[in-house]
Length: 212
Image (cartoon, rainbow, N blue to C red; front, side, top):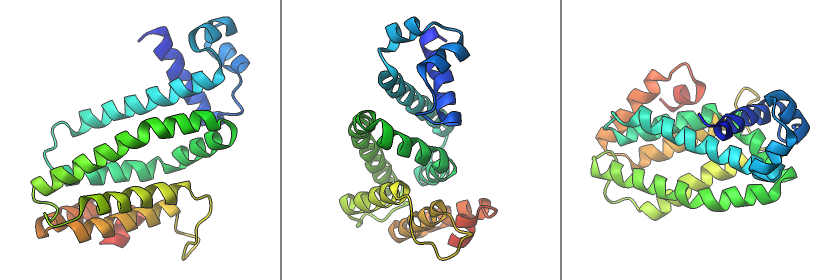
């Protein structure tokens, strides 16, 4: 691992644990035992360091996902695992998103502009593969389905406060339930079985239990 990658990994851990605004360049230099001059020479300023940390974090996560899925031939199963990952990491993701949008809006907008298109392309590709494999009906409108799934996830996670039927529910629970319900509407009988089997395996997690 290069010094640059080591710094990005360590600083990202600091951002997650302490909050982006709370971490100063002085804190980073002291904790990583590097000079501030080195940090500024490598990254320019804190905003660029933050941007590079997020990019590397997302690239590493994508690599891990590809390694986990490379032997899985069922793309609907992959979608459901990705949904679970998103739900499990939602608290950290939301806190980071709120920090960036409030205190570092330029970095936030740059990341949104760069990664939104790729996220939509990836989701479209998965839907198309699920149709090819017989998990989703060929008659579904991919554009509308993509818009519903993407906007539901994005808008619900971005909302600081949403109405919940009981205090015991999290907005992540509602999101998982909503997406699984919509995927069922897209699914063939074979796809319905994949969704049901996945939910049964995750019965200890409330949203999957609710979706059975």
